[in-house]
Amino acid sequence: MKQRFGLATCFYPDSSPERWKTAADGGFSHGEIDTNNSLDTNAICQESQKVYDDLKAGGIQPTSLHLPFGTQWDISAVDETFRTKILEELKTLIRWSGERQIPIVILHPSFEPIADEERPARMEAAVDSIQKLGAFAKEQGVQVAVENLPRTCLGNCGEEMLVLTGNGAYAGICFDVNHLLQETHRDFVAKTGPYLITTHLSDYDRINERHWLPGDGCIDWQELRQLLEGCGYSGRYLFELRENASPSLGRPFTPAELLERFQQIFC
Image (cartoon, rainbow, N blue to C red):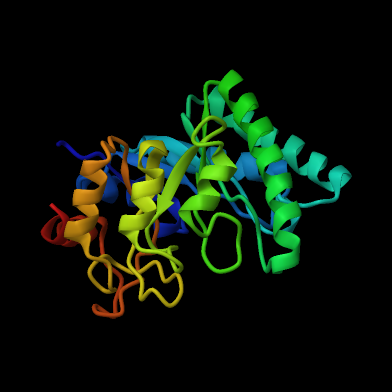
């Protein structure tokens, strides 16, 4: 199987065409635009446009936008007035993506912490939000990918991801392999495999998310390859980590070094 490799723009926070050319020269063809959660919607669009232009100039095709997340963007908010405002702002960003033929937007189903007694109401609100955003995105030629999350966030296990996405009817799934703290990769893929449309790849210690260079943590990458191939995954292999996220190297690494390491342990 020919793999399509992508890189989230958090890898190079100081975006420039020259930096993304190093990624293209290193074997990457896809890019995911990360957004600044502290900005308002108009500013996010302006900043994302610059990054979009830099990616294209560097030879990388922008194929996803990571929607902002945090308390002010929490689609599981139970305050209906507040949540409606959030959805309208996110629709603006989804429309922006559709106008640029960016086919995927990544969506966090909640922020945290979430107490056990809050969880049912928060899940209900998040499902309603995902249904609405998924339907709107489809009209724009865009697909929503709900990301599995760690700790007390919604979507911290396969069962919740199935509920949140309506078994793939409302949205697809972005599989962040360093977010699983409650179940194994095998168990997660066994439940969600048919609905995986993209990935966030990095390594971790299974204690918390770390976004480390693959091979620096505990993930069995050979097993993960077998699991993804076994469920028929045909999407991008997109990495979400920073250029200095390697405890073993203790220094920044290049996109070419990232891909070389990954191919050694995965392919």
